[in-house]
Amino acid sequence: MERFKQKHLLGIEELSRDEIDSILDTAIIMKSVLERRIKKVPTLRGITVANLFFEPSTRTLNSFLIAERRLSADTINVSKSFSSVLKGETLLDTARNLEAMRVDMVVIRHSVPCSPHYLAERISASVINAGDGAHEHPTQALLDMLTLRERFGNIEGLKVSIIGDILHSRVARSLTIGLLKKGADVILCGPPTFLPEWFEDYGVKITYNLKDAIVDRDVIYVLRIQRERQDAAFLPSLREYIRYYSVNRDVLNRYARKDVIIMHPGPVNRGVELAPDVADGPWSLILHQVTNGIAVRMAILYLLSGIGSSGGVE
Amino acid sequence: MGNKKLLDRDGVRELIGSLASDIINRNRKNIKNICIIGIRNRGDILAERLAKYIYKETGIKPPVGAIDITLYRDDLTTIGPRPLIGPSEIPCSIDNRIVILVDDVLYTGRTVRAALDELVDFGRPLRIELAVLVDRGGRELPICPDYVGIKEDVDKSLNVAVYLEELDGEEGVIVKKEEYGKV
Image (tube, rainbow over all chains, first blue to last red; front, top):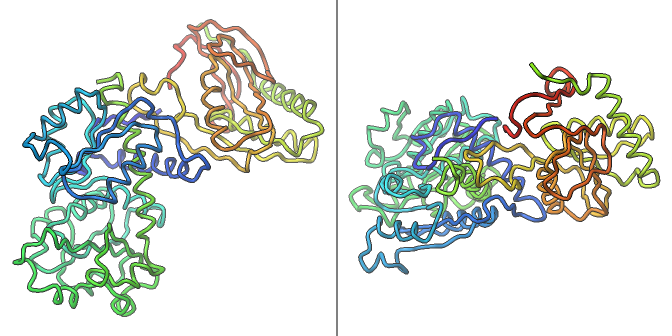
């Protein structure tokens, strides 16, 4: 029988096409566990997972927590504001201390790109990247791909447009890499200041015109305008962004296919990048994405736990 | 070399027939209340065949399901890289039903233990009965089958391999000289 051999989930970049498929296959099984009367399996009994969140997060943290508990793992949470991080402890010291407490897996969100990679090289626990700066957010990309696979059966050949602040978005980066590995056709769309040219190196199309990203696409993936991360220089004004790039019912009626699908990684800035009636409308798969997030994270935790410090195999 | 054929194609079919008859005889009054659930990867095929046989004999087709016990295994922390999982498909509520749990080979009993734990997470059956094609002895847990096709004590250095047409393209049971426990 096939086995999954990765020890860490650092990024979509590091996964093969087959490994992505194994994760999605496993996630579908995990999703069926969530539909049982007893939504819990004993698989990770005795395994301890530390959630290190150095950036604010509600959705991702809770999704990981639920996933860990559904698999019967023990969990501890470390967040920036309640930990020794405020007292000047380094990331590595924090992780080593957790390891000394016999933690088997570490889920980390950090503003510095590649901090999960840094940890993975230095501690024996499995490391899962829950978002590192503007670099990667692999579990988000995987849950999005699961959502697409459920909806369309196959990701290959799907026409997907990703719209918004591509530059600051680890979601866009991970999803783009994943979709290209799976053979989808990807267009990135946003104002020029949000669209670095190096994205073309990945083999995607780039457009500054919203209409080009809407016409004849299967999926429109709208990114959150990250106001908290925004340097004023990137956008002349929010009103201008809304005028040219907000995805609303009018734009969809005019340019989109009738069966177009809308996705968003959340949380939605209603009325900014996405109109409320579109977010809540029949096109939207946003809440499916949330459910699938738990299933994908369960799959990752299960698959990686075989190679971690308690897995018996180095 | 050193392989021993325990059952051929006809032998397998005959045993499935007699297992089905035994299930009917024991549950004659409750045949409408049984549900047959096979343990992947071959118990589910046997479950399907038992249900067909029962339908032929009684006119009642019991619901058939399958479970994959991977998430309930007791050796997950020692086996290293994770095996990929198959779906568990329970076709109906198992509350107050008689569940016939089916596997191809009964050995240590650990798989059955895992299956029992998983089943009770789906509901509270009236009772669970265990049917196996081959009981090879070597139990490590206090588990005893209700229906046995063939009982044959097999040394732990040997592997009992069941071949079924639906999955393997051929049919039979062979005792092989290879290590047991490869997944």
